[in-house]
Image (cartoon, rainbow, N blue to C red):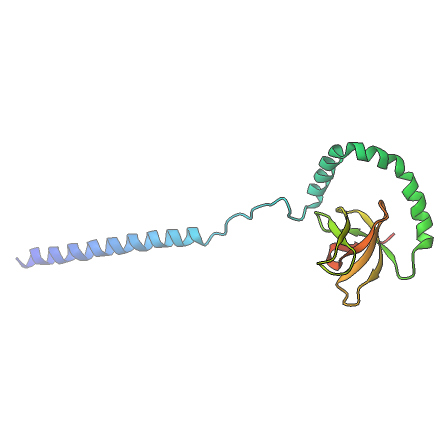
Length: 161
């Protein structure tokens, strides 16, 4: 009778140990699976890598082929005017380019609520004319279209020539 009771108690303890062990193993499995970060999704408006930007430029050029042909013929003219403008830059002005990958809106005043007067595309050449008193906005002139307007400082960078 004593050995049967001992076998019964040991069987129950063994069953509890197996259930606890398997419960801990399943818990650790799911804990480890949830602690792995998912892969980062890639969206269309993410900053392009240098290789991606080359692909995007190649893709945009064929779609704007009718516009590219006149610009190709107009390319010598801006290069001539750029040499002239190098001498004609206003005091404190400098050359730059747009770094925001989706282009920027140019505003009539250095505020977000002001009227939109035009835009400039990614890597488009600009001339920075002045800076707002709060140093958040810069007035720029797009070299290709001669449109002047205000854009935020973080959207452009100075180009050394």
